[in-house]
Amino acid sequence: MNIAPELWDSLYRLAVLGATKHPVAINSAAFGKALGISQQTASRRLIELEKQGLVKREVLRRGQTVMLTEKGVEALKEVYAELKRLFEEEVGELTVEGEIFTGLGEGAYYVSREGYRRQFIAKLGFDPYPGTLNVKLSDTKSLRARETLEHFRGIEIEGFSDGDRTYGPVKCFRATINGTVEGAIVIARRTHYGKDTLEFIAPINVRRALSLKDGDRIKAEIRLVH
Image (cartoon, rainbow, N blue to C red):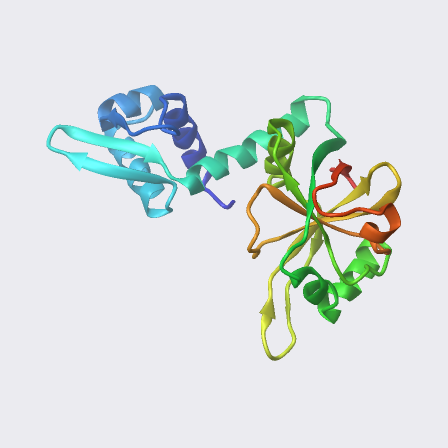
C-alpha cells in the first residue's frame, strides 16, 4: 500500500491508542506531542489519513474522535507481516484443515480460461484440471492461516481481458493435499467465497484421485515461498 512514510507513524500511534477497535478521543496538541511534531502538523496528518480512507474522524464540540478504517487496519497488517518475515524465523509453510464441498461450478470455467491457463502452466509448471477442490475452513488455526495468506505475495497470476470481459488478478501458493497430491491454492481478488474458503487446483481430478466426497476432511500444507 502506497502511504507516505510520515503517515505510518501516525497510523501506528493511533493503533496503540486503541483506534483499531473503537473510536478514540484525541486532540491535535496531544497527538502532536506524542509524535514529536507541532499541533498544526498533527492536525494535517489526521486530515490526510482521513482523505486516504485510512481513518474515520468525527469532529465534536470539544475535540474529535478517530478510528482506523478497514483499509487502515489492513495497511498495518501488511507492515506487520513484512516485519515478521524480517525479524522472526520465516515460516515457510502453513497447514490448514477443512471440509470438502461442492462449489458453484465457477472453478472449471475460470481455470480453463486461456489467459489464466497459460500463466498456470508457465508459473506453476502444470496444466490444471478444469475445476477446483473447494475446502471450507472452520477451526481457528486454519482461519488464521487463511488470513495470513492475504499478506503474502504468492505467485502472481495477472488479470487479462479477452475482448468480451475482464478477468481479475489471482495469486497462488504451492500446496499439497493429504500429503500426496501436489498443486496450488488459488486466491482470486474477485470471488463469491468468503475468507473461510480455499480453492485448490492440481493437474489431476483430486476428488477422484483421493476418493473424496462432500463432507470429507482434508489437510493442506501450503508453502509461502516459491
